[in-house]
Length: 228
Length: 126
Image (cartoon, rainbow over all chains, first blue to last red; front, top):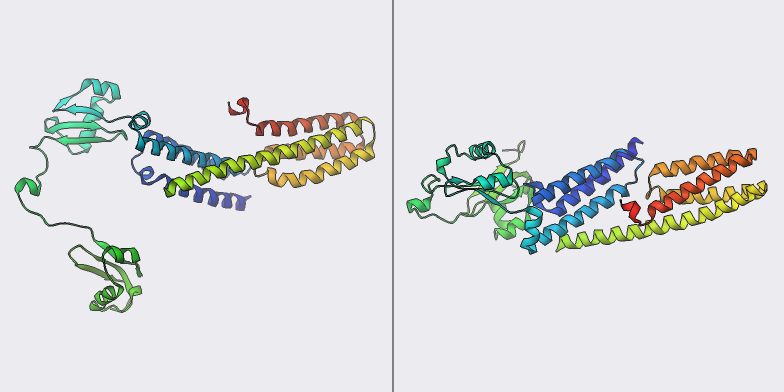
């Protein structure tokens, strides 16, 4: 009985992880209403056959796979058609326009003035005077566009030229070379070995972390416990 | 594209699983029902030797079907059938005709119920 539940849990866990991965990264972050529903349903469907050995595993597996198919279909549909996107996800609603709160929009979205003020405070805007636009997004989050005089100053505002900024590339992680990173950064294995040798490390296995930034600066950290 | 291929693969898998499960259950229920009808007739005719032979045939077939059924239907249904078969065995050896007839009828009902639950019907959906 116990071992059965253990094995069932393993199978369903692997299945749910696989399904959530197939649903894409969006499923992990801010959820659209239909995505939230599917996530809740999947967790519930997996839980029942997991603990009740009287229910065949297939009774949990088939609905989960069906939901995966539906979710993929809806996501694909909303990518291809604005109508489906609006139907399934709704559309963003402007709550503040040109500094004025839109009462009708608040009423339609059932968003109280207190909720709005709270969300604005969370976003770091304490004075309604500072806001040009506030938009209620389809995932329930609020986007705020402050008045031009109230936004953060940027190098462009000050006329300061800036250099290109790329992203640092992780080359060695926990003693293992990342081949795809080498290709991306146009590096050879010899270059990497030469770079770690400069820092007195003979083996890649002794490197805890190494990365290179777009300007060619290296960060190399030796594993703890290795001879300095 | 990769996601679509996987999802389509899963969909095909679901359809295949449904077809296979329907084939397994419908085939098995038909055979068991026929055997139960033979058993019933032999009990009614007081032909207990033949009835015992029918019963052991059913038990033999059932032990094979049970393994595949356990993966497809609720185990509660399988337990009910097991329970009925045990009762039938006892009444058969006691040659208790009245109780035998009623238990065979009940077992037939359980088997039919499994078949009806498997079929794609409007009442099963709602």
